[in-house]
Length: 106
Image 1 (cartoon, rainbow, N blue to C red):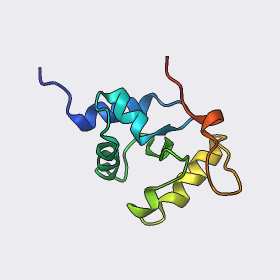
Image 2: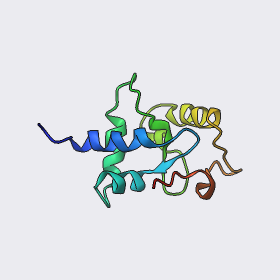
Image 3: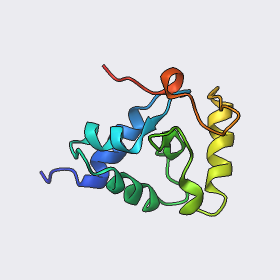
């Protein structure tokens, strides 16, 4: 049996993020077994198909900001809408208070 690829490991971690919670790129990289490789998470998200069921919108940068708009046109708008529907709130500067909404797996 072939071991899971890097992207498969990253996607498996992202699928564990519950609704109403977010995780950072670095956090996902650490949990997938690739510490200090947060960019790999960004590459994996960029590689997702348009119809993917991976909850990509729950991944944010270390400051609690959305950053997919740089990769997917209007991706940050769609990401914010999806997160708000799940109950995630943003401050006046457009950041997510990670102390309240960051996923803390056991």
